[in-house]
Image 1: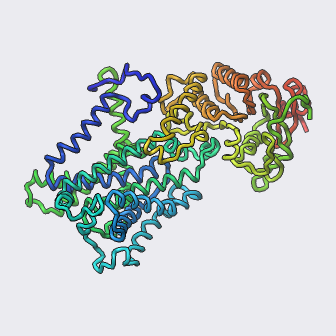
Image 2: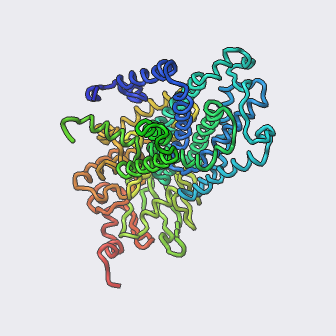
Image 3: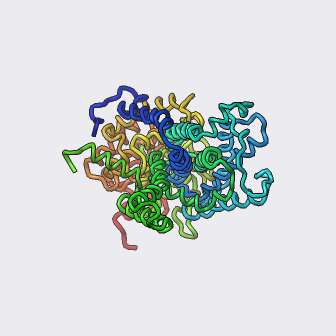
Length: 367
Length: 261
């Protein structure tokens, strides 16, 4: 290990309660954020921003949201893409219909609206658990797909079913949309990357604060043993609904970012059941009940097929082998890796990270 | 009742009957628990002791009878209101939050005293940080009292059984209960652990004035630490009184030693 935990003592409970108790960790975090803001923004290519960094962060936020429900509170949910859909459509309609609406406020409100929907679809969790709950959250998924298809008002009566988001949607301050800076900012992938990065960091910090507070303890108490939670006075029903609210808040913001920062248009077809499953895989592969794991899962599930496809293109020479063949093979490889990973480490990447850290702690003195 | 008149009842159970689809677990049981005492509920397996505790803090709802706690009468107690009124509880088969650390488990025992809402928690503003530190102070006192300092950050799932029982006691204690229900706090423990546990129980009783109702099978422990013993058998009360009085009760002797009917 480059640094040691031993002998680093704290003198107050406030210091003990820090997000990162070790000075070195705090420096690393600051350096990482600075790296993401300055170095990556300056150096990364357009492809890197639009095809890798932005989608990973957006999906990471959705994964974090699902992890709050599944990993922290133990409420299985398969409605993620549906909730993202609610977020995306809320943001679109808020900006379309309210003159003074701005992007930051629209993202926040779309999270709130999705959260409200989440509470409604979370209501069955008060009576049913586990796999049965999956079925009822599945209803959210189908409801979203149906409602945005059946009522064209939500899509502003666009006949094609896909709306590309006009420039006047992108404003951070009211009346700002026509400035050249604004147009340049939102047209560039750097601009959208910076927005995604900022929102992601804020949501991660909020989540970290929640899980180290009474709210987070209540979630985990309900997950681990709801009878005992009830007996020590934790309001189980309220805790579950709150978890659903916050979980879908994150999914809603992720949905809004998915449209506004990633693909640049609005389309309910992309928020399909397949995407819900994808986010669920990210949670499982990353690690249940882990913030870091949510992002590791998103990185792995999203980026690994790209790495394999690009890698084999590089090795075998682009075009020498049929692209469809490579694509299908990359799926097989990714699937195999996931299976092996989950057999070796059922806790996912987060557990893998924790156990390697533990090994490094005692290295080279013990195995 | 066979009680000294100067004692005040904190808990009065009146004619409690509980059955599960025709199987009678408890039949017409009435007894009082007096403020500040250690009351043991004893009886052979299946006598209805754990069911009795579950009735007291609202996990089970009896078909008949009333529960009076602290002057308030209930026919239907709810676990949440029991906790709010100050009834703490541990379970026979440990019911800790296995994914959480010792510290978090005990902190969760203080959830009723924390008033900050989740917005404050998310932003770590307002009452959130202040409350957390205040309650941490109180929880650290409990950790010190139970000698759990060295394992406060350890996940409870990796602890030995005896320690888990201690953490569970700590969690119940963190809520500053008026009355503690302990379901076999010493079951499966070594002699040494039992001694520790009975010391903890007596100290809690003496220092905080907490009334204690416990279920225990070890007669030595029961007779040593109890002020009052209630004996159940087949869901009926067969003895109630001071330990030595109960020991000499013919029905109790029969229930424990067996008698030819």
